[in-house]
Image (cartoon, rainbow, N blue to C red; front, side, top):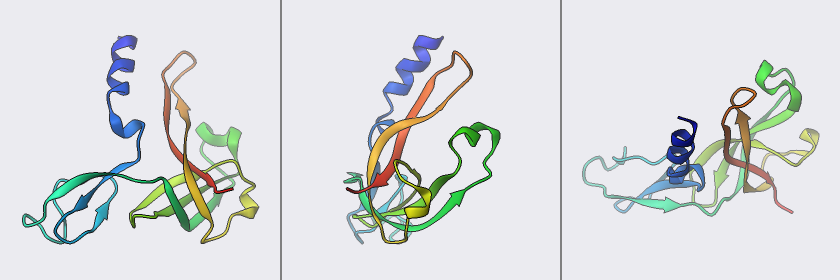
Length: 133
């Protein structure tokens, strides 16, 4: 069972890449991917888009009192990042002092551990962002 879970998880490209979609009709970009453009409806044709992973902090919050699952890493920053391509994603900001973060700071995507399920469980990885150096 465990082998099957790991195999399935590794075949999901969105787990390893920051991907979304772009409407070829109006040019809007979306994260996560969509199958229909909300602007163009059926007239729009969407294609997969791999984002650069670079962006700026649009808004953020410092979490000082987290749930039990995240108490070991508090305080930490959760932000809305506006990617260079225009889409916005919500992500944790890592490798920084929470007091040093400001709106407009440049950030870049990194691949990090998100959580571990149980003592002997599967470790989940995903994207987070860190300040650009």
